[in-house]
Length: 156
Length: 292
Image (cartoon, rainbow over all chains, first blue to last red; front, side, top):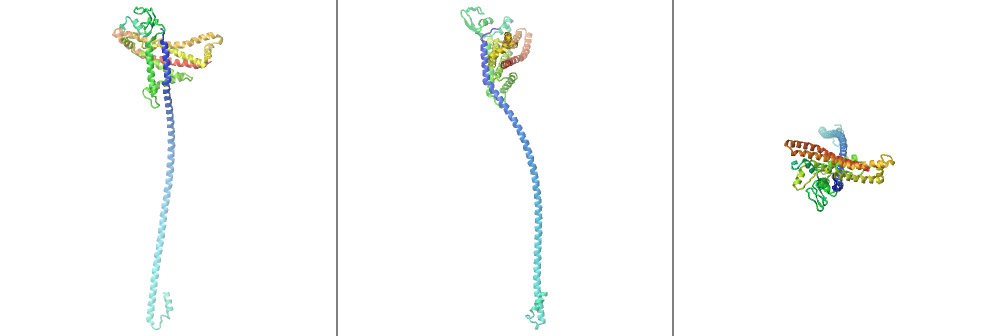
């Protein structure tokens, strides 16, 4: 073991290497590691948050679906009711219309009957007058007996 | 390859000699008998010449491999750092992030103060020491043989088997320990930690001696542990490599042994790098702690 200036050279080299390592090697790698660690932690947290949000969204969706179902059932019930009412209304209207038409027809018939009766009455009265005229040619003056004839006409 | 040497002793010595560049003094008798008329800057031939160069010489191979491996480490980690994205990491980035997270958790586990230096320091020590140790897994003769073909006489490829390297690291760590001790506790606080415990104040010379020894033991044990482990491992590789010069049965046996030792050595090189790093963190933690 004989010592020489290699000792000093080695020490100088060593300090230079340590300095270089401390300045240019350690910090960038450490900062990359730290940043990555942080990113991974953030990513995991974001994942958890996403999962939680997903659960919430699923719950919300289920709620909405249930509400929608209830609403739909209501709408259907209302529609049924309305349809029934419409049918009912239509029925009533039809009935009324029928009755009205019936009444009109009856009135028509009655009118026609009256008219027929009226004309019949006139004709019968005419006929009766004519007959009476024929029978009682002279004695009977149409003007003098108009009252009587009118009375007769009314009795028919 | 051991057959190229005159004796196995010479083979081992050759493998344990660093490529040292320094100044030989005037009047020095070189290995080939040449007497220098004036001082000469050259590569040492053998341990005696390296010793004669004194302190102001440098182990070129240790410096070359340690700097090369350190640059390799920083190059790849810098590349990963540049490309670091927050997205899904792939390939190199994945590996680098894995290493950095491992170091970071180790530092968090044993260092309980705030200091931006410690984690990068631990990373540098762990990877760098690991890479330097890993040179041990390359068969002992490959690189020195290639170097000898290129005309380089000595080539020790495992920097951590050179005590200069391990002590260089350990003393740097020790300097940081002293710096942070004084910075965190003040010079007085640091001194009182050394002088006024474990015994009462009036026994402060005893305290100072005990604590001083404990303090000095930190860098020395740090350096010697790494050096000793790697040196011993390298020595065993060299001894196994000696078998390749014998009969083919011995060479075959040597091959099996080398494989087994290399597998076991993977554990040692990792463990030694980890221990060096962990102790550095612990020493720095102690330097920051105010417990009295």
